[in-house]
Image: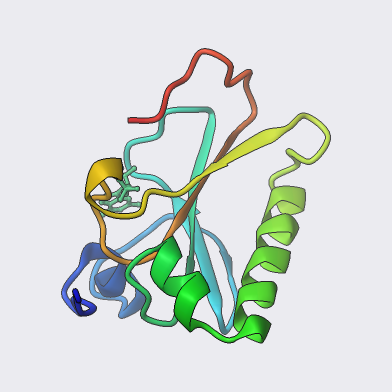
Length: 120
Ligand code: 5GP
């Protein structure tokens, strides 16, 4: 099984080794703008704990951490003012999804109609 790579780009962001455009932060969760946005709002939401992917996170994190993470996603959606207008959440797990960064993250997209956008 793959082990967590401490040198992945989001780990470096968490360590403060590279900058990010921060949207929200607390002791467990960080949200920042995607460097290559595909919608008017395109942020990445990550737990600070070391999980490789969504699958790793839900399989191995505590129920409390999982619940806290998803409650925080809703808080961030509220902060971004997309609850009424709508938003899309995407997460890529593993090879067939072409996951690029091996630290679990959700993409949150919004502030425009996403009907025609395919995530690749
Ligand atoms: P994945 O394919 O792993 O789900 O998506 C990785 C995402 O991370 C991509 O949308 C890409 O634009 C974004 N990304 C890659 N490197 C950086 C970076 O250094 N900073 C930020 N803010 N986003 C990044």
